[in-house]
Image (cartoon, helix red, strand yellow):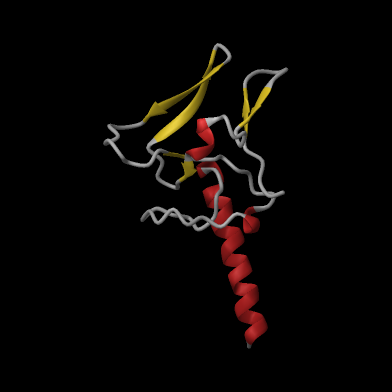
Length: 110
């Protein structure tokens, strides 16, 4: 049920990011992430974008596409939050879609 968090290792193998034994499941999405997941020779590495203080939450961009953007609201609380868990590359299109949705809602209330 809900979203599926998959790490693609290569053309043949994926790793379930939501498996109980996988500590990566504890890394939340953020619109202003401090790390990223990178696959290097079949291993997943969490690479920091900046210095991360002890006790600071790790976060990365989940990279969701636009297919079901409305089903994935973002509550990261960052100033740069787009409001939905969508990959940054899709933000310009997301902004258009949100504006169209909001216009339709406003129009229906008139």
